[in-house]
Image (cartoon, rainbow, N blue to C red):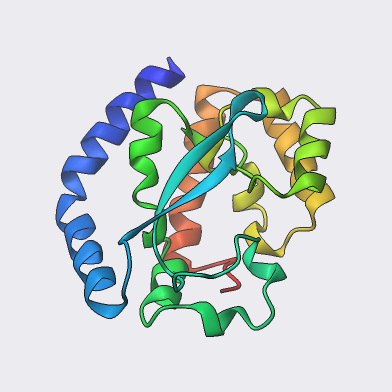
Length: 186
């Protein structure tokens, strides 16, 4: 049922959001050199690496590390990068990842391939068996503000309490957080 939900909603969302996706594509293309999309190596179900697309919000050549590990991350942002991140519009291409089955709407956010501490903790608790999500329980409970152990505690809680209704609750809370721009540090 979850996969059917993901397929249906991602397909419908891609159609409804096509004008927004086109607009963001043009804005990225017009404001900085390089590809409009950034394909990030991320950890998927069973710790398998997959390529996750995002609208490029940082300049070409930015180190492939978590943003909070960059020294003065603002210097790496493109002219519209901060806006894309604060509004989460940079995440729209992940609808494709949901459509092809690399991700789900709800699950633990996909770790970067080099976030060894996060990957190890998720593996220890079996969370790595879940499809990564566009949003998750940890995101609506702190997003960028959470330490890795706390983030994994929320991932485990989601893993142990998965349900269609819990997913709907997380999606609703995500919508409110994005609209209010809560928990975004960059």
